[in-house]
Length: 622
Image (cartoon, rainbow, N blue to C red):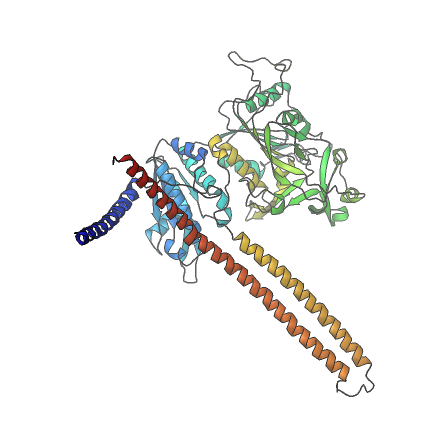
């Protein structure tokens, strides 16, 4: 009887195991469909979690948008440096399509050579990179179309701009969902829009940066006596705003309190306005202070390390510390406005700094080197020689902020009411504090907009062609692109890069290489010392005509060879130690991922099962 019961229990146990296996497979299939799209983002920088701004942009889509992801997935199989990022982009686009509730239709296309898909990619503005001499091409771009035949494209996903993936794609979707050109109000005391030049007696063309902005946006000139900023203004540009009447300053103040988007170019000594022109930067100093930004219009930042070469006396080139050439090291690579730019040229720029206790967030975009010094702006009202600036030059060892992004809630600059002579229109009320956050990008230089600082004009077959020699134009357009979008788009900032380097391995390698270099330097020093000893011994030989070595020389050579063998063994030991350290780290990671983590989950499952059985057994009546 006992034997049969044991067999029965054994048969029942194996049957239960088989049933559990079938149940597990069935649940896996069901969950694969029922829970598709569910995810738990445990990455350090939340790489797989959409920003709230992106989610709001997806909800604002009214008509369907088609996204075409051109990705040469087959060719990427042999490109380990591209394939992980390509898969990440595809997963991200699929996540956007799921979150859009059918408003985004995603098409993943692997263009084959000489196919219709290649023609379609070129038609939509997606470019390719050559793979080999046979003409094979690699596609890795995105294009989108809306119901009104509008289209936008990201020609090629640059792996160096991984942190801006969400911003770039969200911007493309936003522009397709809102196809109308944003309205930009432009106010400047400089002749940027062109017109009659009284000095030459001829008509001057518009500045290149102004012409480029006019092609992408609907530009409107703000009148000098404006008493209000139009409600449909997406961005307000203030380029060296001179002679601002109180009514206009009050209008700018009220626009900022309504959550305005402002790009300001202030300058302590504008060279583009001509020598002797009073600086217009002081016109905005009061408003900037209210917004948490300190700007001193009486100081120009001179930088000896960033000095540009200009024409000196007699036309000879000379370096002028008041004309600055910024490189990538002087730009923020974490902001979409400045990331990826190559060089920026400035002239007689000032400095910006956050005011202590301000309610706004101050983020530097451009900065000087530590070889800089503030100099009086008054000496630039007349032509000055660079040599005069270098005399007695005394750098402070401090980096000065030349451009910054400022965001946050602010208060009015007119707490006692509108300035004298300003009356509010019927139905308007004066704002005392922000109703929405202010978004401001401020540059402490207005000359950067001038053609002579970043554009080279060439005459080709009777036509004037502008060739950029600096990234000033791209910088201004990037700022306009960023602020011309909604607050949701501006809130989508760059994330950390998708590629995560092995920092501990790199640290081990750096330590070992430093040790290796120290050993190598010691070997060279000992070699030099030994050669000096050999030369000294040879000079003391009694018979200088013979080539036979003396016993002392032979002993010294044997000593050197033995020492060289010893040091080589030590170098190999250092390299072997590096390999052992990396292998040990790899073993630890494998143990954690393969044994410890699954073991913890298994232990938790066993404890949970035991707890449930114990609870079941105690609940049953005896």
